[in-house]
View 1 (cartoon, each protein chain N blue to C red):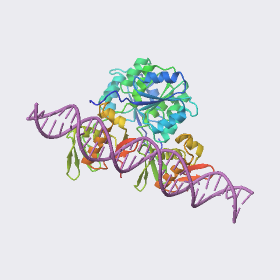
View 2 (cartoon, chains in turn purple, cyan, yellow, orange; view 1 turned 120 degrees about the horizontal axis):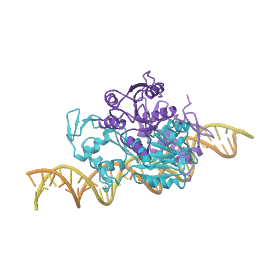
View 3 (tube, each protein chain N blue to C red; view 1 turned 135 degrees about the vertical axis):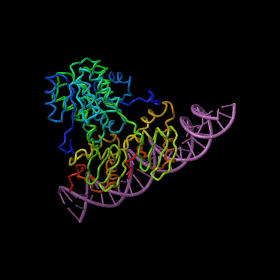
View 4 (cartoon, each protein chain N blue to C red; view 1 turned 120 degrees about the vertical axis):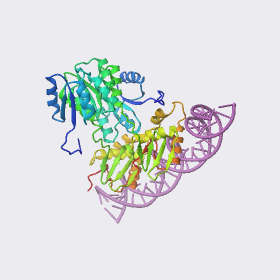
Length: 226
Length: 226
DNA sequence: GGCAAATCTTAGCGAATTCTTAGACCGTGT
DNA sequence: ACACGGTCTAAGAATTCGCTAAGATTTGCC
């Protein structure tokens, strides 16, 4: 995804026994992944245990070993590779069993190619990168840790409100956020209007005067101030 | 593992504006979660930013702010709470957009209760491994031996509870563990809430003041302190 | 049972966070 | 230059939150 500019693409393990659908699905996925195809659960389990995979797509009804059992076995072995079950068996109990076996998602055939790719993006998202960081000049905001880190190694701790305000402003660099907007999103309607100024002041004091730009008569803005 | 008790249940944020379906869904989920209901996207966003949620279920078509936009805003703020979109809008492009906005799963109404619960289990599942040693600053925790060893050769003996607490915090450096989380994992539901503070105090006294960071109003955190 | 270690409770104090207020300061248009 | 509205800053009040010490209770062990 963003920021990852290696030419290595994520490796996807496809386990599908249907001689027609297997290669077809592999080709579809090949647009975004390096796909390897296994045609039975035993092989899939072996590859899942030994290889280094970004994600797995597993058919439910497989020879030798059921797809759900395969995922269950992997999970028991401590393998947490995200997995999506793709199958013709679409009854609700089967879905529930598949998900509780350790699958991260469950789709029934026939499936839409775009939706499959979107669901794969969804279940791999938290594993690849997941920066959870917002760049602000020389600073990096870590909303989860409620702190700002400078490229020089300094760090400043922020309060909850300060983090909220900064995260909102930094979410769209260059955009001007009006006071009513900020007020509605971060404070109670009957708070004094001056609160915003106060927190902007706190942030400028803690981090640097120029982090947040005032646009007179309009609101506040982050970024785009070279 | 003991210490898992059902009184402190995972907190679920439900954002649903339908006056009939909202409470109904809430009641359904209440079997497994502590449910809070918001009826518009603005409120949902605020709660999502400020509260500590195990998972979110979000309706797509919401007043004030669309459900997908709400999730997008949360993701941009670094909030990675797993989210499932539950909606009447079931066309494939809508699913793709919802998932790419940062949702972890997408279900269309009418939905099956069991499947919803299974999918929620799937997106909240976390796989935790148990390494033999955990590095904490200059210290090394040996959970098996219930002691901390410093690189200088000192060592400090810990009690069982101290070890459990420290191991949990150290298992994911940088992550903030909330009091309810720690409470649910390490103590009995009807223990006094102050217990956590006490053990944090013990650890800081035995090892070093700065091993565990307090994130005011949020919880405790290990690592990530230059 | 009796001892010691471990676990948990309680409560007061200090610290952090949030929000208010009021006056100084700045920018813009006339 | 002047006036006016917008913005900045400092100080502090109210509230919530966390730290700590001391003791009560439970557990494990001989």
